[in-house]
Image 1 (tube, rainbow over the protein chains, first blue to last red):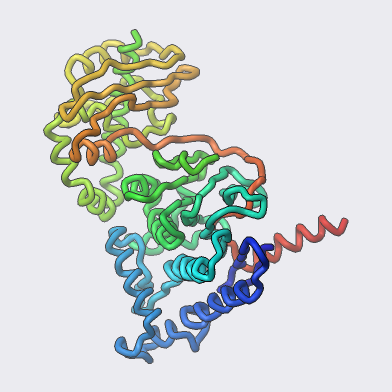
Image 2 (cartoon, helix red, strand yellow):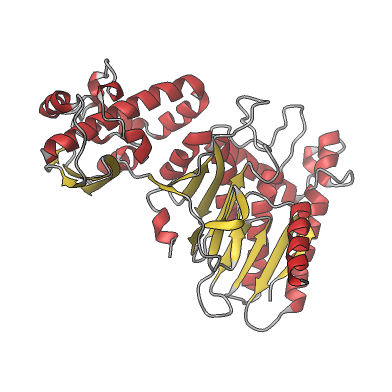
Length: 246
Length: 192
């Protein structure tokens, strides 16, 4: 049975197959709560806000914070600066990496507890493994950016991570770090399939900021496949994307 | 005739590609630098290989390849991107006006310097809808690097509603507020 809770400002859904393991589901949500307390830019007592105020020395940062900051630096370098947690005013907002990282870690918890069939969905970014209650591989639908009640593509990720970056639900919340203040209207939705949800998420965010050229970046990057939808309703997919379509 | 139509398409695609690249260059220099650094090895090799440049249409959405008229071919094409001479001539002579006949066209196997190359083109309603590489050099590392860069591998489709038979939905981050609104809507329907 899938269980949904609202954490980090978004719905998080966990479904673990086989026998109902309520304590494990609860511990997954507890983990997201802990991540939120440490990384929320909306909570004044979070570690990230302490860092942004200059109240913490680099030497006193938690292991988790260092891991996230390292991942952010790596992603920035790998994407030519298109992924950047620096806001430009000396503060940081690591939420672009925290979500995928937290989903991946939660999935590891479930997997290490001995479960082969499950999915974790945080705000539309998904790590799934194994099969659903009917014994079939999990099927993921890409939501229509122009009509949230519709699905426009179905994929079977078979253990890989799936993440979508888009400009439709929250408005133009993704900006081009090389052109601050500009908004991106051309590509409205970019779904990326990666080796895990962290890979899918960080590159979906960066490639979305590249506009029309993002799908070429995904095509060139080994291990990633993508499906971009533009404002005219035309989708462009990478050469290997079809392997995930039923 | 099939060969001529195919050649025409290849030339037109190259032209569109070059146009596309030169325009992108003006607007997004940092990404150009990034992509260029990724493909430095391939660029060098491609420059030495006139054959392989005939398929340099990385952006092959059907819509951009459609205008096969003379306008789609830029007046000045960099020498490294000019396809084999005989193909260019054939295309130029037929570029004026004649539409394309529907069908699936297979081009000749040509020597792409790093190995054999053969392209299939599908024309529907007078428009190029698919380019597919039937053969391409893949036995050397350099060939693989070039092909990942240069072959027209991206595919386009118009989005259309699909069966909702899915377990999970991916999309731009759904906020808690949007989720509650959607849930409220669903419950209202259920209560009717």
